[in-house]
Each structure stands twice: as structure tokens, then as C-alpha cells.
Image (cartoon, rainbow, N blue to C red; front, side, top):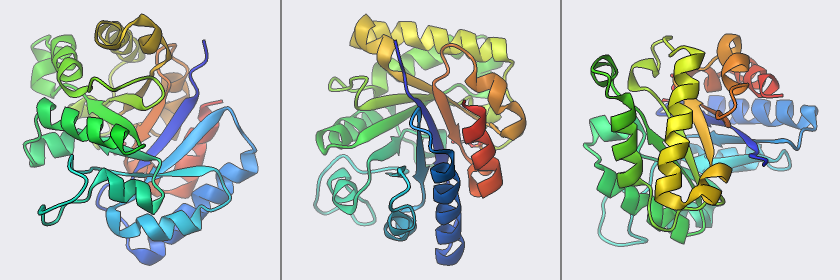
Amino acid sequence: MVRKTLIAGNWKMNGLLDDGIALAKGVGAEFKKTGRRDCEVLVCPPFTLLTSVKKAIKGTRVQLGAQDCHFESKGAHTGDVSPVMLKDLGCQYVIVGHSERRTNHGESNELISKKAAAAIEAGLKVIICIGETEQERDAGKTIDVCTKQIMGSVPQNATDKNTVIAYEPVWAIGTGKTPTTKDVEDVHAAIRKVLAKKCGRAVANKMRILYGGSMKPTNAKELLALPDVDGGLIGGASLKVADFAAIIEASK
Ligand code: PGA
């Protein structure tokens, strides 16, 4: 069973034209140098940089993704961007349900499921984010929370080919804190079991589960070596070429 490693950079609301292009070029050049075909590398810049980043990574096999989308393909939704538009622009991926969207924009599992379904329908691959808060972890509810999020936000049309799950404990995002490797492996294994219920065992065995939350060059190797960790969703460390390249290297 082979699940191709995915190293994804989530730039969040960072990057102006010049530094965004430089970062994308740097990542592209570093990944090209490796000549690796055993892993996928993805960058998810803000909407404003998608077109420039697309040009900057041309010919490098680095893929392009967005950080969110609407569930409709067009219409009266001021300020929103549709999955059809992202596909049209040349995106291969879109992140949905990031904890910052769930918290700052009150996104529910139901809404995230609709977004994911529409993105898949538009021909994009989706990265669906899940993860517990510190309070939920302390209350021993990590698996319960992740189970509810998977059951509620993974859509009916999800398969291993079009869907990736990112497990991101909310308390680990941008904090420098990470769960122990044992905790990460236990939660990932539990997630795969829930996915088997949702999508069937065969699909669940092939679906990639990324870890996200303070992944950096110093901890990437041990996290990425865990059997049910199939890559990383990286925020802060994806904004520096050297750090992101070191994480790609650690996935060998
Ligand atoms: P971080 O963010 O790597 O800065 O913790 C990860 C994420 O939110 O995707």
C-alpha cells in the first residue's frame, strides 16, 4: 500500500507580490533540485498571489492550492471565490475547514462538507482540516471531536484520490507545541478507523492523513516517519524557503 507523501505549505494571510514570488521560486528551485518523485509538494498562498505563484512554480512540479472556497460555482456572494474559479486558474488543491476558518468565520462541519463536495465536483483535490482544542484535549475528547468532524465534514463524493485529511490540534497551531509522537500516531490511527466507517476500508487505507501544527525542520523527521502520517500541513515554517525545503528533505 503506497500513500504518496504530501508536504503542503499553508501561507495563510501572508505575502505581498515580491516576497510571495520569491518564496514560490525558492521552493520550486529547491524541490526541483531534489529530483524526487516520491512526494508531492504543494503551496497554498492567499488568493491575491495565486496567479503570480502559478507562474513562479512553472516547470518545478510544485502544485498550487487555495486556502478556502465557496460551495457555489458562481453568483451573488460578494467577497467569495468559487472552486470552479480556482480550478480555472490552475489550482490543483484547496484547503477547507481550517481551524482558523472554523473559529474566525464560524464554519460548521455541514458547511465544510458542502465546500469540499463542490471543490471535488469542480475537479479539485481537497484538504479537509480537523483537530481538537486544548480544552477538548484536556477533557479527553480528542477522538470524539475528530470523529464528529470527519463524519460531518467529509462529503459523500470523497475518495482517496480527491481527498486528504489534515489533523491539526488547534493548540499546536502556531504555538511551537506539538503532541508526543505517540499521541500523533494514536490519533492518526483512530482517524483512519473513522474514515473506514465513512468511506469504506479500502478507501481509508489509501487516503492520506497529514499532520499539522508547529511542524518544523527539527521535529519533521520523527513526525513524518510515523506509519499513519502521510505528510504535513505547514504554516509558519512554509514561509521560509530553507525551513520548508528541510521539511521536504525530512520526508525521505
Ligand atoms: P503552523 O500552522 O505550522 O504555523 O503551526 C499550521 C496550520 O495552521 O496549517
